[in-house]
Length: 39
Length: 519
Image 1 (cartoon, one colour):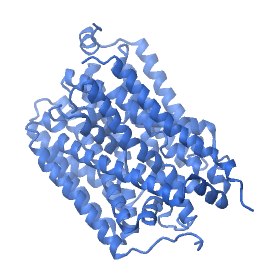
Image 2 (cartoon, rainbow over the protein chains, first blue to last red):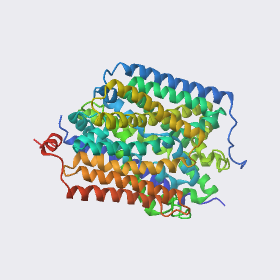
Image 3 (tube, rainbow over the protein chains, first blue to last red):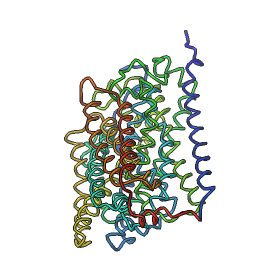
Image 4 (cartoon, chains in turn blue, cyan):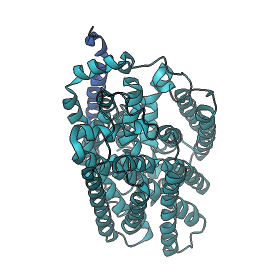
């Protein structure tokens, strides 16, 4: 009997959230810093 | 060996020639950059820090290059291959949670403080920030201790994989590599080293991303990988593996106390690592656009490649090789990353991977060795005997670089530390916990005092030594690695802030220089 793969996909969703989340963190954090940049 | 899965291949002529050519090219690039770097310095000061005119591309790539060590490029895949998805927390999925804040918090401040104080090293910057020669010496000694421990394991992965892949003893490969490293460190100084680490960082970013994306496509995508892993053992797909011991290193995979400690480990270690923060010493003053570029370069080269390397790569290796690599008593899971590159891309990709791995080990090692040498020459001898000539310091530095390169080489061949990841892991935790506060927080908090910093360094060093015994040496372990991280970071934070509140900050002159009032 084949295992129900969908029950095990949750880890990949967490993985994807981490990849996207850290990208957004980089984007937003950098924007917050350069917003008040003194040249 | 399970015949259902791929077996470890015997070295072929193509694998051997490809690997040798790759390493020769890498070493030729290193020598070239060392020779070019020689033109960029004329004094001991410039040898240590250049002319503080390096732009965001080279600085960003060098940060990636110093951060991605042999462990990140080899050990992280091995952890996930061995324990499954639950290994990714410790293997580096939090890379960006550390390395990007390192840029945000330390890049411009390190450059600014060092330039204002005329400092050429991190201990000198912090020593002058707190107006304390004693603190500078203490920081230099502590860095030497931790970086030595951390440097010991750097060549092991490269030596192991070289032998496993080519069948050739690693002696000559490693000896020639460390000789070339000595040559470009001596010739190129800070600038040459920065360039070499940057070129290596760009190469690692490219190879890491290539293998990571290629492997997912090769394996048939996420659903197919999941199906195959569940067929082997459903535990491999769990984000936590409660069946593993909750004491010792495995706490990082088996308990929420351990898993929650992993982002803190990556955050403090990336921001606190002296060989990371030192990349900013020779940086130019950045404009807004250049700072954005710096963040982008680091995200692109250190983020995605390492995140794939530390998670999906280990899982896909498990899909392809089953547990066959674990059956190999000699190298075991350390072969996960090289075998994956061979399985999906043949000898060509394997040669690229091996070149990258040796570059990773050499680059991180070079960054550390350069600091260790300066710890002795600039932060201890020149500090207490300022009349010592720059020429004497340079020659002593050349000797120390040779010594500090030789020791990890010798230890790798004669008495290799068995648990590469763990051995370096605790030194990394200690370095991170101490220097996150002593370096990064000191850039922002006017109220910090030298006594707060001194107590933090002493506590962090003793606690790390004790942790090595309690977590790694004692059988059974007294506590988990995650708990140890909380003790380290909590203890350092408590002492740094409480002792600083109770003692006198530096003079108003220094504070006004470093923390000018906003217009």
